[in-house]
Image (cartoon, rainbow, N blue to C red; front, side, top):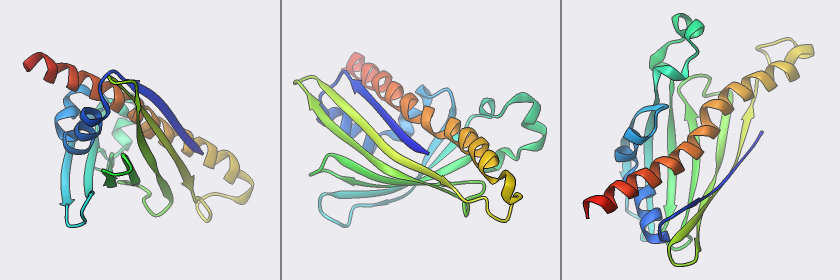
Length: 178
């Protein structure tokens, strides 16, 4: 399943890039589907690059009410492994889910592009791949894979758009404080 989200942020590229790279935990308060974002690792040892491992914890509301008794909330997270390049104004990322991590692969690139002096286009391109072989009968694998991709996609893809919305809200709040 391809992931593609393009959105325009009404702030200059430097502010957008630096906030996305350095202020994700502070932005969680603007994301209704995320309880918190925790920086678990940060590596600045390579000039021009910053590598992070961030843990995104899903809000309990992301689990449909009828399913809540059966879903382990402690597994409703993903690790975001991100390599930020200041020169390219881009981030290579891969997500490792808290559930079925050996069967769900999600990776891609987020790039940032100036649109005039005061706007930035954020382009997210990625892929979500599932491997359900051995878990379901071969005759059902296509249908089941599609269903699981849809479920996981609903966890991941909207987060990208909501992250852009949260970024704008965060930058708006920062501008009001200045």
